[in-house]
Length: 190
Image 1 (cartoon, rainbow, N blue to C red):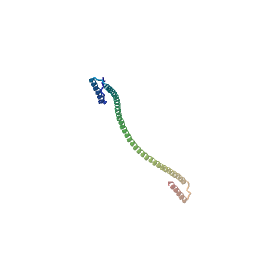
Image 2: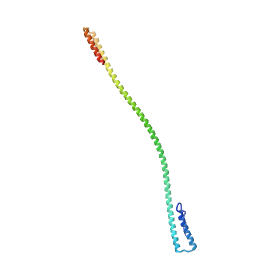
Image 3: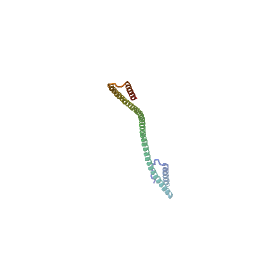
Image 4: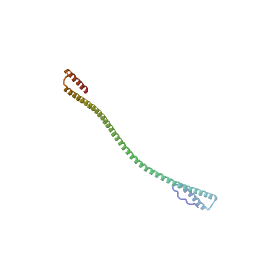
């Protein structure tokens, strides 16, 4: 008796079918002849053994195919997940590029503003230095003016006192004294 072989999916079906047909034909021939010669029994045993090997190989191949199918499904899922992750990362990258561009523009604007402020600071510092120099010159002039004013005031007071003193000086002495006063006044002005 021959055992029935289930149909094989994605396996080399022609070999199994051919062997199954050979076994069936041999049985039919054997039954028709009604002879069971030792050679036909040996052939039958050999064919049964081959059929069992093919059946085992068929089961093994189905298991491998199932395993490959599962691995393929996992790989396809990983591909899908990776493509999705690439899409998210691409969006993140675009966003970051936009932010970098914006920050670069802000940096350029800030640098220009800083440069303008540094130039303004330089101008103001120059003006302050110039004003301090002018202030020093004016203070020096004020001090000189005070000194001259004080000297003139002193001379005027001294001159008034001399007028009160009886005039015993001769005209030449008086001219000499006026000449000295003029020289002193001229020296103070310079």
